[in-house]
Image 1 (cartoon, rainbow, N blue to C red):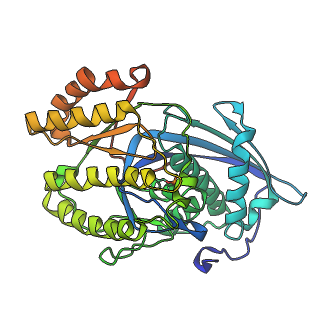
Image 2: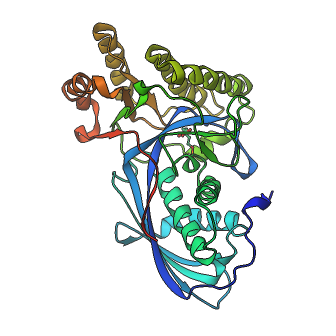
Amino acid sequence: MIVSEFVPKPYKFLLDSGSVTYNSPSNIALVKYWGKEAHQIPANPSISFTLNNCKTLTTLQFEKKTTKGFSFEVFFEGIIKNEFMPKIVQFFERIEVYLPFLSRYHFKIETSNTFPHSSGIASSASGMSALALCLVQLEQRLNPETTKAFFNKKASFLARLGSGSACRSIEGPLIVWGSHDNIIGSSDFLGIKYPYEVHPNFNNFCDTILLVDKGEKQVSSTVGHDLMHGHPFAEQRFAQAHTNIDALIKVFKTGDLSAFISIVEREALTLHAMMMSSDPYFTLMKPNTLEIINKIWAFRKKTGLHICFTLDAGANVHVLFPENEANEIRQFVKASLIMHCQNEHFIEDNLGQGAQPIKI
Ligand code: PMV
C-alpha cells in the first residue's frame, strides 16, 4: 500500500552533509490503540494526551555516499546500540518510498531520553517520532517549499510506520489517530489535533507517572497487538473504542471530570483485560499496580478530588488530574503511592504542545 500524497517529486539537489536535531515527546492514550492490520493500520481509533517532560532528543547527521543500501549507526546516550538497528532497518524499508534519499546517505543517529530507558514509558513513541521528524526536516531542506501543515502530516504519517502510537507525538495537546465517524479529518494513516472544543478543565492536565517496574516487558506490544487477531472479544472491544471516543467528545465539551474518569479508567482496564484474555494470555500489571489503583480509588472516594489512572502496555501507572487540584493530589502521591514504585521513582509531567526543532 502506497499513499501517493506522501511520495515526493524528484529532488532537485541533494545536500552533501549536515545534521538536524529534534526533540519529541511521549504521549499517553486515553482511548487505547490495541490491535492492528498490515501497514500499521489501527484496528480502532485512539486519542491521547501529548506529554511535556518525557522526551527523546535525536540528532541525525547525514553524509552523502555512493554505495547501495541503507547505512547508519545508532548511539543511545553516547553508546553504540546495535540492538536498535533491526527496528530502524524495518522502519527505513517501510518509508523508503516516501523518502527516496534514505539510501543515498550514511546516517549517524544520536539519541537520548529525558526519562529512564525501558522504564515502560513509551520510548518508541518519542524515539520514532523524533527520528521521523529529523528525516522530514532533512527532506524539507531538499524541498524548501513544503508547508508546516504538510510537514507535520508527513512526520506523523512516517512516525506511524515506525511505531503506531508515535504518530500521536508530533503535535499536542490532544491527538486523534484512526478514523472515527464523528471526528472530522481523522485518519488511519496519521494523527491529527483534536478538532473540537476542549473545556478549560483540561488545560494543563497533569500526569504523574509512577515507575512500578522498569524492567523489560515480558510481552512486547507487537506480540500483544497481534494477539487481537482471533481474540474472542476483539470486535466488541474495537466497537467500544468508537463509543468511548463519542463519549469523550461530549466530556471535552462539557468538562465533566467524573465522566472523564470513568471512560479513562475503563479503557485502561479493558486494555489489560484484552491481554489477560488473549491466547496465549498474559499480564503486565504487577501487585504494586493494583495497590496503587486501589489507593487512588479510596482517596478519590474520601476526598471527591478528580484523580484517576491510566495504564500503558506495562506495569507503570499514569496518575491523571486537573491542574487546580494538583497540590493536594501531588501530596497524596508522594505520601502514599511512590512507596510502590521501583526505587521510589516517578516523573511529574503535564500536557505538552508536541515536538520541537532544536537544529534545522
Ligand atoms: O505504538 P505501539 O505499537 O507500541 O502500541 C502502543 C499501545 C498502547 O500504548 C498500549 C496504547 C496506545 O494507544 O498508546
